[in-house]
Image (tube, rainbow, N blue to C red; front, side):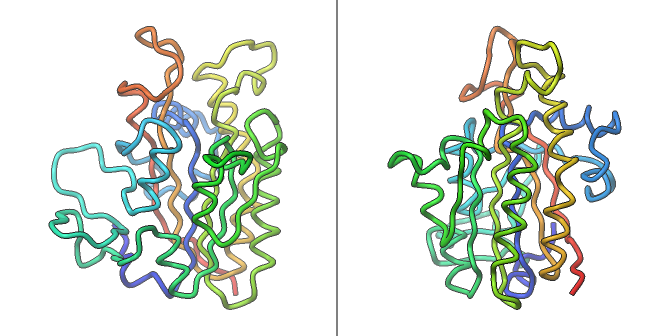
Length: 268
């Protein structure tokens, strides 16, 4: 675990959530050479297996933004990178960045960060009161139909949008970016020619499209200096296993997610 207590205030922070991405699909894409850009960033060149605190986007992101990132999928007491202060916490250590505010965006804004949210799925679309809750936690938030799940080219759209908004932040100001990646969320069948139904194969192809677009974002982040990056899924999804399709169910393929945390060196 990186020392978030020492890093916050000195580096930028980027939380990139690959919406609905299954751990097994992420590993298959990595082992098959489909995601070379991510492979070059993952510590040890592997995904860490973790358990999500939520089985769907809204719940998982609320947890993430209060400091409850996916938990290592192994027994034991695991310290957290971030934690809102509350009595009796057993997952706060000397390396945990703790805060009195209710959410991580509020805590970072209070410490001079510009907080930026770029949404992908409907919980970020700002079309309804519910769709305003998560983006409303940030100082700046964006969503368009082109950045949403129905556009097969949403990954490059989102990466270009993120790069553009990062460039607009004054030099020297630290940034907290939440990028909710839409491509890996259903529908993904259109990423494989001739497919009519979502499957692990089509989600893997969707992830490959994200990887191909990723350098635009990493270049923009590097230009701002060092960045603590967290790349993970918010939850997985089922494609018919055990009769289940989708998520928001207590199935191992939903709870088990890929995770990585690493420092992205800046080029100032």
